[in-house]
Image (tube, rainbow, N blue to C red; front, side, top):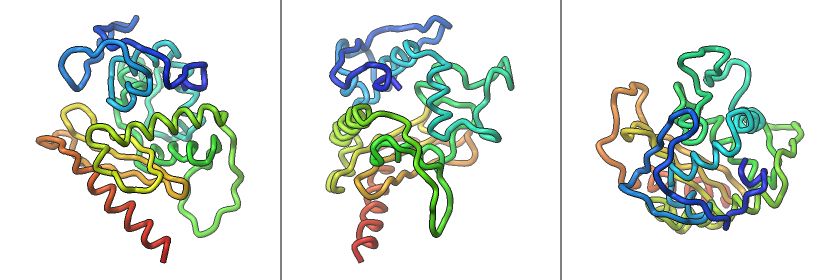
Length: 231
């Protein structure tokens, strides 16, 4: 959304102590602050504070509209609006910027939202099928796609994402929720968009640590798919 509203990957943003207008103070996964950085670096390093800053610039309504376009908010979904529950809902920057939703998104829905990038801005609603005649809908301009593509390419060289090295043309991003309850990796190349989730149905259970295992598993799965496609 930020790129679609005028921001560029090389624009600067500051990682610093920050509190939103509604009183939310995000924390990074590391101690302290790293100061000025580009938006591209912020994404690659999973910096929470700068992400929340960008989200607040856009506002709750704008972000929600993008989630709706990308098939993440729809009738019968798991997203809780203020209208549905005034006290406990997902219309806040912890949920919208960092993914701290009450019930989360399904793997199918969040993975399918990434397909807009390899498809040059077009989006198809996810479905289980043998053959599809559905038409694609253009959601974002190609300059936005190119910007996200570059940022996600940079992200694959940082931190645990480096374990996916070797997958030709891969662009992708890790995701980790509080207390390491959920681990994600979603990525794509020119042919496939693939994502995996590691976690527990019981949210009282969490991983002791994260050492990039989700990315290592992802690499194996992606390579199996690529090998099968070649055959």
